Image (cartoon, rainbow, N blue to C red):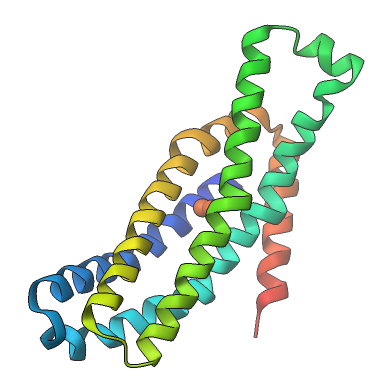
Length: 184
Ligand SMILES: [Fe+2]
Ligand SMILES: [Fe+2]
């Protein structure tokens, strides 16, 4: 499979299947409090490990393969050819919005998600109460819902539009290399 966007979408779906368990655990903790802990703790631990492994690698594929390819396109914005190629004001506005979205996804949301995964692992390992675990779990669900929606509705469609077939192939190759570099 050589479509890097489809590859990322498949990973979103796989990650969200695991986040569905987290959603149920969060609801259960809200409903039954401490009584839900014996069942919830293994689920929270597994999601915490997924966030340190699969989700972190997924974010690296975006941060280190997809986003730089997109930034390369917008980096040409200031050059004479770039200006000629993109002389319409609405395209400039779209590019500015795109750069802003990239910044949010890469500089703000990815680090926030990673930090919350760390808190969840620490809380789950450290005998935290039901409410602390529920609140952290709920925040992770909220962040991931928003983040994946923004990527799927804004960034990925734009990437499909902007990246040439050659650029898409290069992104896919870099993603595969990142998978190799994380093995073991
Ligand atoms: Fe992301
Ligand atoms: Fe993503």
